[in-house]
Image 1 (cartoon, rainbow, N blue to C red):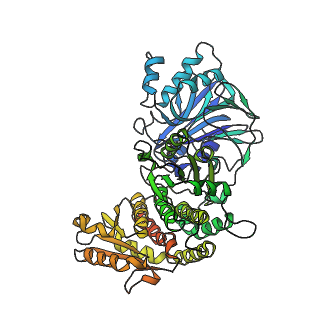
Image 2: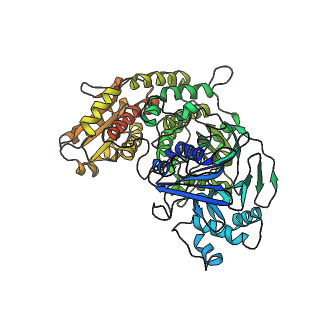
Image 3: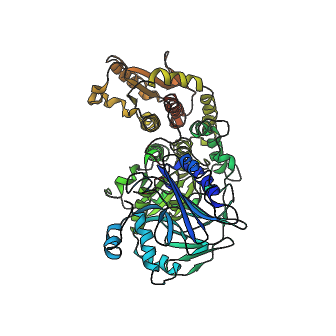
Length: 596
């Protein structure tokens, strides 16, 4: 969601901050701002809308002189997206930026700030006013920050600068991601390594309820009770080319076409020295000993989780279920005697999933996180981690992370117990090759998107069994980037109500990859065609029929979701592109949802 960048060094800060914020645009935002220190004063500039508005307003940062500063892209939670509510927020002494939500802001206003006149509608202004309050009696800044950590409830990542001190900035964290970038003669703060990777590849982690004092030449990390922490930096496994579009017009299409590479990378990373697929034994032990697997996720990761449930039940004969995290945490079902939890999250920072993880850890249960981000919160706090190795996913709409999640879940299920004898190493190699063939048909998908989706108001995806699970993901892709109202339905449920929505010309896209339900789904297509629908069929070659518009190469039926989703991703991309939308940054959405 929101993005944070901070810099202290020898160079002019504002251009570096703007460059870092540009790397975080993919996270979603509706305003941006900078605060730069010079000669005992802090200059603040903010702009609503795209970051380019702030770039233009500050002449690319040239109008804000100073070598210490903080920047922010805001995704509105408290208060409308306007300049007043945009970050940084400034009090009488401090300026700060904040990611997260302060849950007890009303209580803090009543207890500490009854006589304070607030300018904005945000919870963030409460934090900067509290810092002013805590230091007005001469309290040291680090003591005030410890006091702040003690009274704040909720999630926060903070970067703070002090108008009375141009030699340091402060980083404070709880639940929301925050890193410190280590440089030579400079240091940085960022909510994502990608904001800093152009300047350094070495980073310090900050854990919950810790704070850091960051100067040009050093970083000191402390607990909330002032104990200094000796923590070594780690090297990020990122490359600038990973966060560049290269020759592609959008990250979305680049990431769709990286999927064959991602499957091959997953295969490579999950092999042992003998070339066999490998999962650490301590993970397999916990999975084998449990009596049910509970998969917790949100959005696209939840759809991967449904496919994962299918894998566990059909490959390893292990009971499993997939749950939406935001529902599970407040409406927890009756659990079995020996549950095991799997959390799926591209970012590893998803707030709803973390809330479930905190809850089940208190209950004494074990958990595995499957994530794309090493060292992320969900990864650190679970008992085990499996990485996706998908590389940075910049576009808001997930594509390659989804396929990596499905592939890792398949490998995990087969490692627990391979009751059907599937040769996953071979079958996933076939999947990668088949994906490459699909990626060569982009002109076909463009033509079909223009024919079926360019002028429609709504659309339906239908399928049965595992194809239905893919329909849910396909519908989400189309609706989130093209704004076409799209729903995924179990094909057999159409006649139980949904068919009432079919009108003349309504696009209905069917996915058919399973031999046992081929004729059933085709019967449902006949039903919607009889009521005026305009149907499009995505089928696997072994079950294809004359007239099917998209035919994908044969793969093992169980792995069909990895290939049938690719044409659906292309259709969503072209539907958005042809309507003139910003495909990578759909409205109202954020990449990493770090608030509940």
